[in-house]
Length: 205
Image (tube, rainbow, N blue to C red):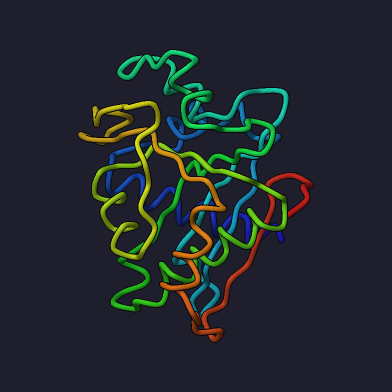
């Protein structure tokens, strides 16, 4: 598990460093306060290298990072915009804090992103999540939409610079609304792609 977790973190750092210029120190500063509520999932190449990783923050005593950040500049969403207007139950709302595919390591393998989505949805279902939130770079948001997962702006938020991204926006979806879309777009993901759920700390995943 320790090796898998290190691989997942290394994959995330490689993608965020290359794409947004985020250093390991910056990542630790941003995500460190949520470490006790953090779970990772990953997709591995045949040589054991993580080629995709997802960082999840489960709900707890501290509000998840996306909702905290959405309440601050550059979005400064009011409380009504954050939860009530979109019907979020924060006790069952998980934060997809990062969703990364290392295109350098993965190459042209188009199975990787759908496999990581399978890991993500399996973790959310296993933990009885009803909704999930994220701050997505516009390019990543378009890529997810192309895979059949259309994310909705949280409280009418507009794209803005965020942690090295020139254009990011807080988004959400309710899992009940996605179930039909998920079944339609992902009828069968190739089971030969190795996946794993690995935890930074003991969790229900």
